[in-house]
Image (tube, rainbow, N blue to C red; front, top):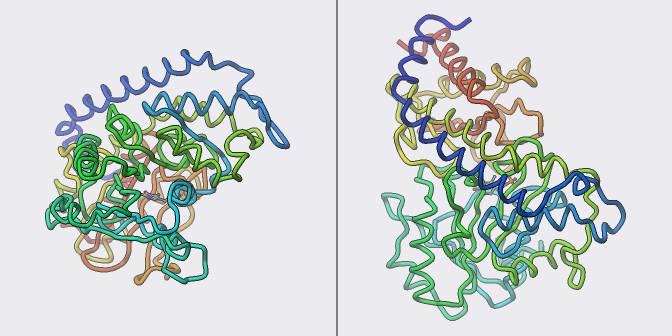
Length: 416
Ligand SMILES: *Cc1c(COP(=O)(O)O)cnc(C)c1O
């Protein structure tokens, strides 16, 4: 079904990335064994999967799930719940949990992910945003080369700086993501200046791409989405917060209410899929990372600029590819959609998404709505014509998406 030229590109890419794929297999092995051993340690058993109703008191499955997540991430405690509606909600809950009026949140990795801008808000916006509550906000832009501006960070930390925020993944911007080792350096740096500061990491898209997680290098609190990496494609909704027990507890009071915290919350039949998703997550994350490496290799062969490049170290799922026209972006995103098992007959078109300055085109042929451990792609239609792809529950599916995109470009006369 693919033209000879397309298959030739695939073969060449697979020769090039062979060693890299083996490295990813080693990461999958280590993380898979870590997750299984943690399940074993906590004697995870069939009865943990029963869903609770009502208040959900004494839901042992929920309690053990928190312990398993905490251990897998090398954290003191975790709060893993289907009641988090999205990654943004989870991150917001963690921040509101630990910040008080007069405190400052200082982001040291530049402008955070788009959906967080409204959580941070403006003083007096009347929305109950962080700044509306009298929490101050500061942001230190990254340096030209994408690294943290340590000198500026040290001059911005004041006695009221309560939380230092770090975003691990590039998100949808053309900058490097931060490895766990780099996050560890940031933690050491800021704690030297202010030992009692709480370091928070937005860990979305990062889980299981490396052998360790931010909570293993001194990060106090982190959060992520269950419809991304750790949900393993099976969790239908939810998020997690992990870190120091006292901060996770404060976040739990925000999710429910002070005095209630994580002791209540019916799981409504979601428990088994959250456990099983965590069990699958190391493998599926590995499939998605292989897909990103494959995409980078193929598009580099075709002369496009990629970020990260195929051989760069990886710490998240996102692959950015810089094309040379809007037509390339559209052919790419439509190709990803055409290769989906779900909604392949739907043709994505650029549209004026609320909150965005330029039309955006998106491919999301997913089993879980918006689930982005599944193969998906986004591209704002503007120069410099960058498409972002992420996810893929199987490596074969990722390859099919990339090859369909290239086939489209050939059919539309966009490649010589
Ligand atoms: C996805 C993501 C979020 C927000 O998650 P939603 O589920 O879309 O609300 C925040 N930060 C980063 C880096 C993300 O990738």
